[in-house]
Length: 172
Image (cartoon, rainbow, N blue to C red; front, side, top):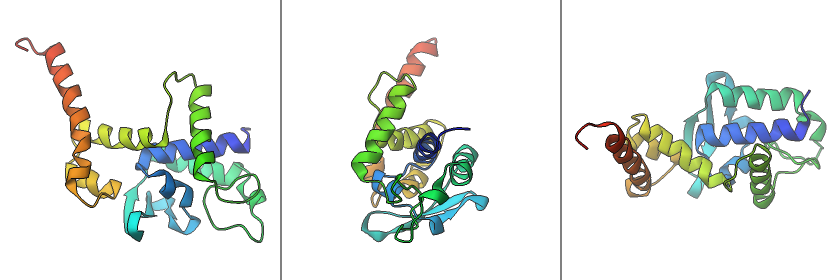
């Protein structure tokens, strides 16, 4: 059986990459926002704007494992909020603590690059774009007010497309 902290970290990472949530959204997620059986979560984003974000099966499995085997019920105290992710004291994670845990987990996994929560958000958007998702859909999933904010991700995807074209097209 995995340690509770490991199951929590795994659920955080899977959910962050599967949903593209901001760090504040991730640490503030509450149990009533989780609709795992239906494969989505309700997210309260910047400006208290609510959006629905689908969550993939790997993230759902990691969250369910954390909730079932991760010791979360033992962390809950009468004063604990209904946050999804709780510290060993039964309190919500501070942003800096959650950030540090993500970085440490990446380091232990052998990643040489310094991983940040925003990199997971960026990867979420870039991978959707590279696999053909519409920019307006990505805008909605990320909770961006304007399309120009989302268009930042087209630069990365454009460079990748250019590199692939140069490498594989006979007339590049």
